[in-house]
Length: 227
Ligand code: DX5
Ligand code: ZN
Figure 1 (cartoon, rainbow, N blue to C red):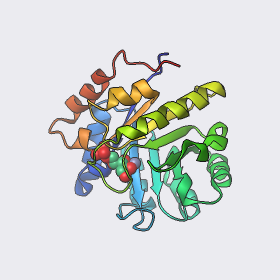
Figure 2 (cartoon, helix red, strand yellow):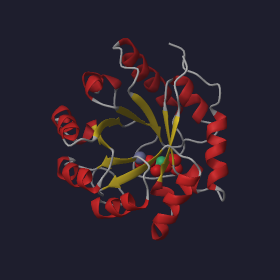
Figure 3 (cartoon, helix red, strand yellow):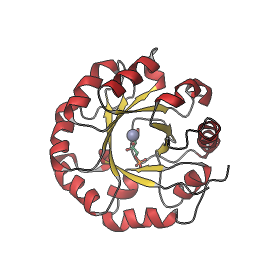
């Protein structure tokens, strides 16, 4: 089955002192969206940016923005991220005991909700959330840092998520993969059922952002998920 594949540039790998430049580079390279990693040094052992910076990014682009919340107490950030103008807020199922109520709150704020799961988390933990989200973000590395190696053992999880969506008639829900996505791993992820490729170092680590995005697109041309 042919599923349209979108590319999200993860600005974690951009130069934080020149964020606007990184945003523009991704935009003119034709990415479909920007992925913003929000880390709090509790849920993950790293710290990045919060709502004030996201607000500044919003002013620089019309691309859809996704806030990937790798934080404890995600409920503290939802209102502020919505106010900052993001289009998608993705929470980690491991970060809250009330994922469904947070997802509903995100939706009420006019923002698309996403749910993410770590490599060690079973797909079973998110099945009941599938009909409430717009995106399932499957982590293909342990979250916290860019430029890690794609974990091939996560591929069956991508397939399991895509199959569950298919069987529930939810084919419009995107399955995103995040971590270690490059021209070698992107086709594996798409074949397994992914529809959004989040890429940081593969895009910003290259000396030609436009060429890197083109290369990623080319790597998945004609690759399709088979139910
Ligand atoms: C990792 C982040 C990713 C990261 C991916 O915790 O969630 O979005 O930026 O970076 P690469 O593509 O370099 O693995
Ligand atoms: Zn991310």
